[in-house]
Amino acid sequence: MLITNEVYIAGVDEAGRGPVIGPLVLCVYIIQDDKENKLKELGVKDSKILSKNTREKIYAKIIEHANDYQTIHLSAADIDEMRKKATLNRIEQKMMVNTIKKSSIKPDQIYIDAADVNEKRYGLEFKKEFPQAKIVSKHKADMLFPVVSAASIIAKVERDREISKLHKKYGVDFGSGYPSDPKTKSFLVDYYKEKQSFPPIVRESWVTAKKIKEKYSQAKKLDGYFH
Image (cartoon, rainbow, N blue to C red; front, side):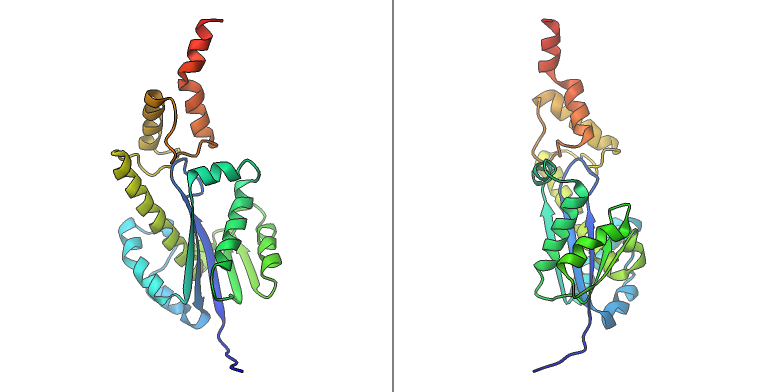
């Protein structure tokens, strides 16, 4: 029987938690602990503080150094359906666990960017599913641990690519998909006013979408004329 001293560490993160348009992308990135310095040499940092060009440049290199990585894309429709029964935190937890399980490598240590205000509580689900592993659940883990930064970059690049595809598909640059983006808000308002519905890429369970629907619903306005 071959006995090895290899220790595998996994970083888990997401991109696209807050947007009203587009997918939520979750990533688990697994590497041997003695290779983690390679990530630092590549300049791996939290994806949010790297430019889009920098993320694209190091994306392939990060993958090249991985022992394994897995991603899951949740569509807007998937998210809306799941939110009928669970919070976004719970959905993320479940899908992160599923993403780790997709890997043929069982990580010895799992580092998670905690979405819950209570870091330890967020990590309990992972401890239950992976009792053999050391679980580190932290806020801003993507800034603290290179292995989580790598997962963050992969998730962000894949989401950005999906958004670019959607810009082409709908023939309009609707921006980042975040509610605070004026381009996104303008696209949603214009589309709803014309079609009286949202395209399937919109998370209709988001407050932004609900408010636009309420404000610009012609059926509601017409109903008001007859009462």
